Length: 124
Image (tube, rainbow, N blue to C red; front, side, top):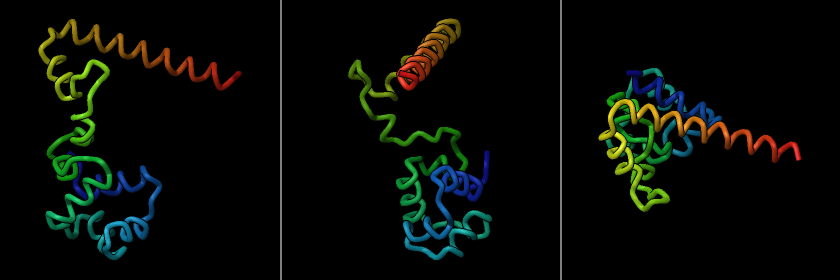
């Protein structure tokens, strides 16, 4: 798993933010952000929670304990069927490996079809 500083730097760059901009959001100095990103110092628990909330990830993700960067809010959102995404994931886990692969193929096909539809609309 990646180190906290590497993850923070990646999240910040993904949002096209400078260290100065992130420092202002978190009410810390740019030097503090640099120290975080270089793994010299680490945020206290309240600041860690603030960082996780700002970037929409879990503290486990920031600490390198999980590779899942989905926020708890995303997992608790309801799908079109009324189930939460976490319930849906649990349902998928109960499927046999063959059925999981089939479901993933369907999702890939649907994603590809959506991209093609979007490109066609842009050309019009």
